[in-house]
Amino acid sequence: MIPSRREAFRYWLRLGLISFGGPIAQVAIMHRELVEERRWVDERTYLNALNLVILLPGPEALQLAIWLGWRLHGVMGGVVAGLCFLVPSVFLLLALSFLYAVHGDVPLVAAAILGLKATAIALIVQAVVRISGRALKKPLHWLLAGVAFVLMVGKFAPFPLVVAGAAVVGLLLKRQEASPPPTANRGAVTFPWRTLATGFVLWAIPAIAVLQLAGPDSVFAEIYRFFTTAALVTFGGAYAILAWVNQQAVDVYGWLTQADAVAGLALAETTPGPLIIVLQFVGFMAGWNQPGTLQPGVSATIASMLASWAIFLPSFVFILVGAPYGDRLASNPRIAAALACMTAAVAGVIGSLAIAFGRNILFPTGFAAPEWNAIAIAAAALALLQWSRIDAIWIIIGGAVAGLALGFV
Image (cartoon, rainbow, N blue to C red; front, side, top):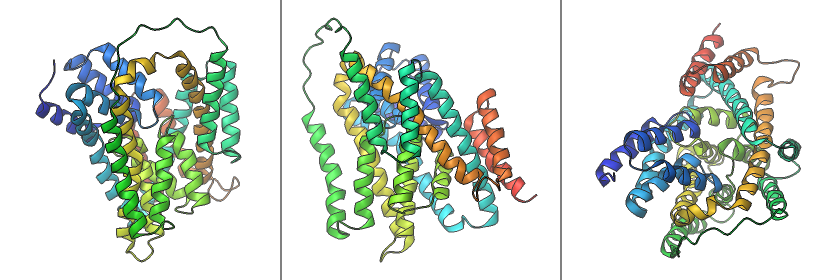
């Protein structure tokens, strides 16, 4: 059953307003409502779409929504689905970013944010456990995870090189195995050159505007270049890419502190939509802390929108260009082997993020003086995430409430 465009628009907008809980919850919501209840797509179509978005860089749930919108109503259907899924979280996080930047030092707000930060640590640890259980099936996978962890903790190699190296390992090992039988010819597919060209023009317009108005050495140019690069290597989800972004934004560019980065993750966890929206917060703080001749609020708003455009535009292009080839890509055994090795490496990368953020929030002045309130909140949140069926959004809210309560004891 194919819905009308108006009916589909109402659904995608509603999804963008209620899609809390991260990519796993969002993927589950779409499966339940679109496959089981509304029957807009069948099970096989949905699983093929899911396999495709796992192969591509970018936020899985957003890209799945774009693909499903494309399947139902073509290119414009995909664009509408993606924008409805994304835009509510963009503006909500922008408002939360202003609240943090302007009032983050107020004791009441700071106490709530400490609780959110501690809960974010628990969410990262849970992600490590979950991904490790799914991805580390062979000794090679454990080795890749360990190497990735050491490389990221020691800052010996950047995230793009780590995941690229893991992918090469998977491709080379699969190549040594017997070649699979050829797949049946599925027919020719016309390459969507117009869609690709449109995506490039949409990317180039802000790039040219920034270069002309602010200059190639401005913070806005740095943000657009950096987050464009990040968008092309966002394999493994928000936690994985945040490990690298955290190193670059804090240590190389000096856009924000590590405590700010954890706060951004905590705030992003409270919004619907893709968790990788946290990178918008990083851009916001870069503009806020380095405003140049502009007012901090103006600079931060421009920087956050540039970051979001650079991060999310490629997701639309990847899906709308790659959608016709989804079945072929998802069934390629070499790509599957590369993906398995990349996922193993991602487990190690996220482990490094847990170490970096945990040390900063739980032991801010060193191991001799732990932050016991944060440790207690993180431990309780992790226990609830692992052994209860409470939705993650309520645990996040509970972390903020606990921070308020413990901050005034």
